[in-house]
Amino acid sequence: MTMHKPVMLREVLEYLDPKPNQNFIDCTFGGGGHATAILERIGQAGLLLAIDADSQILKNVKCQMSNVKCVNDNFRSLKSIYANNFPYPVSGILLDLGLSSMELDDETRGFSFLKDGPLDMRFDKAKQELTAGEVLNKYTLDNLVKIFTEYGEVPIGRARQVAKAVVETRRRRRMETNFDFVAVILQAFYPGAFARGKISVTTRDFYHHRKKITHPATQFFQALRVEVNGELASLKLVLPQAMDILETGGRLAVIAFHSLEDRIVKKFFKESVHGDSPTLRLLTKKPVAPTLEEIADNPRSRSAKLRVAEKRHENTRPPRKRERCGQAWLGNPDAVSFLSLSRSRLPAP
Ligand SMILES: C[S@@+](CC[C@H](N)C(=O)[O-])C[C@H]1O[C@@H](n2cnc3c(N)ncnc32)[C@H](O)[C@@H]1O
Image (cartoon, rainbow, N blue to C red):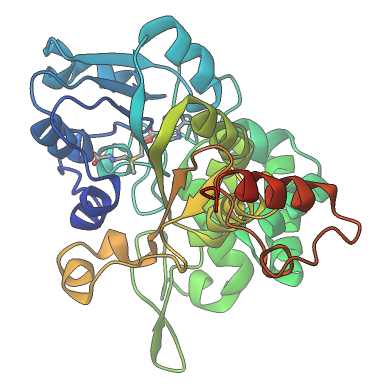
C-alpha cells in the first residue's frame, strides 16, 4: 500500500513551531506523517490528540503511545471531542484537509476514478449513510447539476451534460461502480472516441490540442466526495471551535487542496482579524505553497495551500491611526477610553 507523504511538512513545523512539553491536536491524522513530526518535537511530556473520521486511525501504532490519544470521529465536533478526551491547554491545531493516499489508493473506498470499485466515498463507513452511489442514483437532475457546479466548480453547461447522462443511464440500470460513472462522463464528452474505443475508462492521459489536460472525471469525483462527506460544512464548523480551544498565542494551521476549501479558510481568517475585537493574528498574509522540489517529489502536493493564524492576546489591538493622533473622541467612545487608559499609564510628570 502507498504511504502518505505529509504535505508541506517543513512549513507546517515552522509555523506551528512545536516545543517540548506542548500539547497539539491533529484533526486529520491520516497516515500520521505530520503527527509523527509534531510528536518528535513535543517529546514524551507533550501530548497529542489525534482525530480522524476514518476508523483506520485506531490501527495506527502511534495510538499505543502513552502521550497520544486517538479518536475516530469527525472534526466537525471538535469541541466535544476535546472536552471528552483532552483536558489540557492546546498550543497548536492542524487541519490537513481532504483524503490520504491510502484512502485514494484503496479501491474498496471508491475515491479514485482510476480504479474500479463501489461508488462509496465515505470517510467513515460506520457512521455515514449517504454514499456516492446514492447521490448518483437518487438525486434529481437539478441537484446533480447543483453539486457538480458548486462542489466540483464544473461550468454549468458541462455539469448539465453529465447530469442528464447520469439520469438517462440510471433509467436503464443502477450505477454501481466508479467506472460506471467514468464511462458516463467520457461518453458525454467524447461520444465518438469512446464508441470507437479510442478512449476508455482506463485511459489515464487526456489531451486538448495536444496539450495534456486533467482527467475529465476529476471535478465530478471531487463534487461527489464533498457532497458525501459534507466537507465544506465540516470545515466551516471546525474553524471557530479550533480558535476557542487554542490557548492565547496558540496557532491554527490549515492545508487546503482546492479553492472551495481555501476560500472558507481565507474568509474566516479575514473576519477574525478585522473588526473591533479581532481574535486572530495572521501569520501567512498570502497562502504558502509547496516548493517546486516538493511538487516534483510528491505531485499530490501541487494544489496545496497553507494558511496559519495565531490566537491573539485579548485587548492587544493596536490603536488605529485616528486614535493615535487624538481625534478619536469624535464619535468613538472606545477610542476615548483607549486614550484615557494610555494616559493613566504615563509616568507622573
Ligand atoms: C490529507 S489526509 C491527512 C494526512 C496526514 N496529515 C498525514 O501526514 O499523514 C486527510 C485525513 O483527514 C481525514 N478527514 C477528512 N475529513 C475529515 C473530517 N471532517 N473529520 C475527521 N477527519 C477527516 C481523512 O480521513 C484523511 O485521513
